[in-house]
Length: 320
Ligand SMILES: [Zn+2]
Figure (spheres, rainbow, N blue to C red):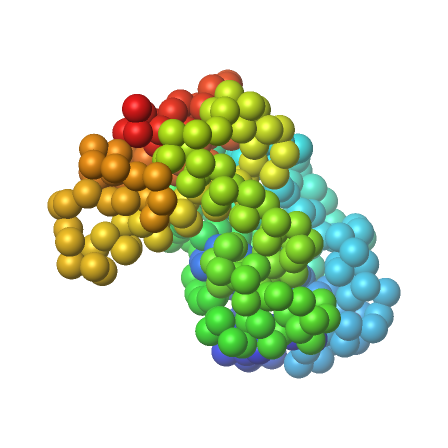
């Protein structure tokens, strides 16, 4: 089932293709988890489909191979294993592959996702391919933070904007594609990121979120064992846990600002808190920065356990 909220972008790409005006490079600027990669796959099927028409047939061998990521004329470039970065060697390989004649005599498609995961060297290497694309090339960059890409790259791509759907539309789509589940709560944790939710185990997401909340409330109350908690969190589902910490901090900041009590103290938990135990807004923002830093530094050789431990300690330090 096509995600309904991508309808306008699908229609535009379809019209451009039908008129022979499909550019050789697209930049899909997506809200995180809103379907940028899905749209890239759809565009790949559109140009590689064995039954050329207004829309990919979704039935031929080409469409199916694209969906399975096994089409010989589609090169998918993602960060390797635990890395968040796309490296220069990967981009050079892509350039070399695209320079070869297509196996099926038509298009060759390269998808880079997340393209904003390219480091400077990788982006420079891609520029060569963007400047002189081999005939019949379609390059698709998927990024949620395209501002991290050099202007020289951005100016050579036609931008396609993918916005997050309304929460209700996302829930309806998840129910239709994945079946019933507590999708409201999953999206409350993951943000309105239906594609990310579709790949998740809803029960596990809800459980991890509840566990992280308990751990944070405990730390704020001066209880718990920061070392053990940090070790446990660093070992499993760390990105999800960091998102949960981010949500928890954001909620507190919002509560503070929305409550009209800006610049006064924040009580992180309703219980076990006395005077002098509260987190002020500046500290909350500081912690939020630290969590975001941790989220974006997966490639850096830092000890995540230690970083988490220090975060939990700075929560409980207030209570000491
Ligand atoms: Zn097809």
